[in-house]
Amino acid sequence: MSFTLWFTGLSASGKTTLSRRIYFDLKSRGLKVELLDGDLVRAALNQDLGFSRRDRDIQVRRLGFISHLLNKNDVISIVGAISPYAGTRAKNRQLIEQYIEIFCSCPLEVVEGRDPKGLYAKARRGEILHFTGISDPYEAPEAPEIIAHTDQESEEASTAKIINFLEECDYIPRRDCCPIIDYSESDERQWRQRLANLGFIKS
Image 1 (cartoon, one colour):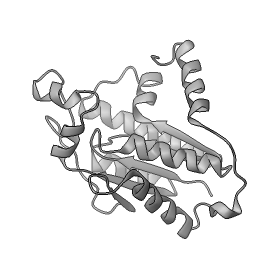
Image 2: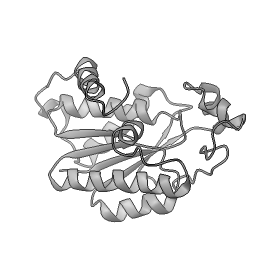
Image 3: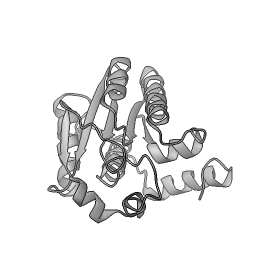
Image 4: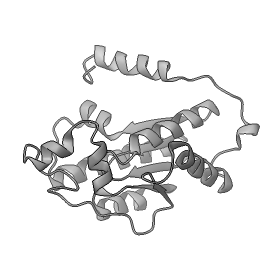
C-alpha cells in the first residue's frame, strides 16, 4: 500500500531526524519509498521561491503533488517540511488518498535552545524575515494521526511510535515478514554527493 507520511513542525523540532529514521527503516524492509526533505527539494526544485506565505504555500503544495504522483505509482512518500499553514496541509490531505500527518511537537523555547543552524538567533536579530515561530505563525495540527513529543521522547521512542502505528494499521508489513535490505547512510551520502556534483544542490 502506498501512502504519504507528512512530518510537520517548527524548525529544529525533529522532522528531519525522524523522517530519515523512518525512511531507512522502510528501505531496509524492501519497500519502495522516497524521502522528500523540504530543504533539499527547495534547493533542487524551488530555488524560485522565498519564504513569504505565498511562497511557502507553493512549496508545500508542490511537495504534496510530488507525493501524490509517487503514491499513484505505488511509491511511499515521506515528507519533512515545516508546512506552517493548516489550510495548505488540508489541501494536500484532500489530494493524497492515504495521508498520515505526524506533528513533531516541541515548544518554541526548546527549538530555540537547539538552533543547530543559528536561524532562530538570526531571526531574533531581524536578519531573517518571515521566520516561522518568530515573525511568522505556525498553525499546529488539530488532529494529526501521530504526535511525536520530541521535547519529551527519545528519537528511538518517537520512531517506535510511528512504526507501530504503520504496522498496526497495516500500512507496512511487520519486520519479521520482510527481507532485510542493506541500505545505509553511506549510500544516501553518495546519492546526495552526486546531486551536488551535478549542480542540483550545494555540497
